[in-house]
Image (cartoon, rainbow, N blue to C red; front, side, top):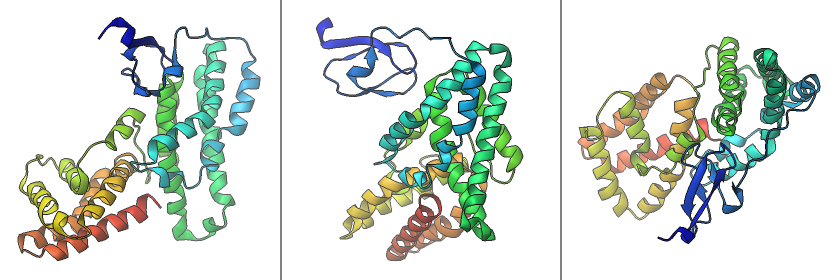
Length: 314
């Protein structure tokens, strides 16, 4: 290609220099993973304005930061192949300003940066927890863990990856402090830090029906060509695809299974959860395959996906 067939400029998210084919209407930054359009490929990044009152900036941040979860009840339903990217972009547009203000306060007054981050995280967690107590469902004991875990998914799969992708001076410290303080308050319900690029990329993998099975086997250290995965893939490509509803089932699994695995990987005790999936679903499914009970395997696997969708994505 000639030089005229390329665009050059800087990523509006991380500032790195990019050179991309001019024909692309959208593309991803190879450095930070941000999804960009040609309009977002800037020639010069504006210099940072370090003017402002850190105290006033922190008052705004600490008064509003909790809304990045409290105003997004149900956002975990967007953790699917079709909806995650667009939901993440909308979430980032709405919430990034508060973190940019926190970053500005820390740059203006770097001697108090750690204290500002601690204060912002404490305010965030206090407001999220106050939101739980304000809901009438909180009075029902068994619903409390469901409410908490729904918000945890928003934190782990939207908020923390967004702050990381912004590449602010406070991004790493904020995410690590948030994770540490969350675990201190909720030790039985940890979450893991992940990046937008890794989470979004997971939805583009093509494991289809075996996506959940692959995740379980990987968690146990089994190779990709183990007997179990080979049997499930043969079942998918043979019996299931020959069923009248088979192609639609595979397409449905492909859409939601990556979201289920994403939630498990970032929102709790992965080993225990994958072990439970094997015990309750995959072990019996594999026994069905070995005994030639293909219809029973189909029914059981379908039930697994529906149950896990209800648990993690609804």
